[in-house]
Length: 130
Image (tube, rainbow, N blue to C red):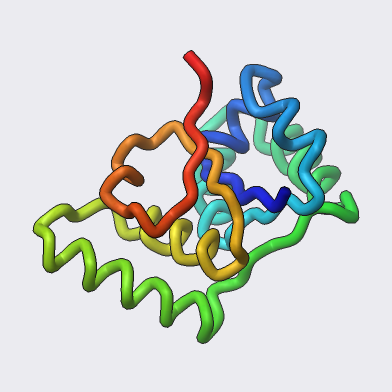
């Protein structure tokens, strides 16, 4: 299975809290570039910048991990999702629309804790078990 990590899924996983089995058995683990930006912004605000960057670099070296860049294909999906949400009057954070677009474009299951993805039935989402 191909999975895509939202920022909170990455954070939970690296702390050993959730998603360990999903990620360990995935054929491909995608991390959107937008998630990398959110992570690094969080690293800058924390007290473990070097350690967090070291862990991220180690993860990125894995042959099953791939970055999803914001490209023309992702931007087309983003536009459709943004328009869909606007028509329904159900906005969600802009970065999360980009993350959803990246996940859809790669045909992944998105691992996340954010319930606002419920507003996008186009996205295959997996929420953590209670």
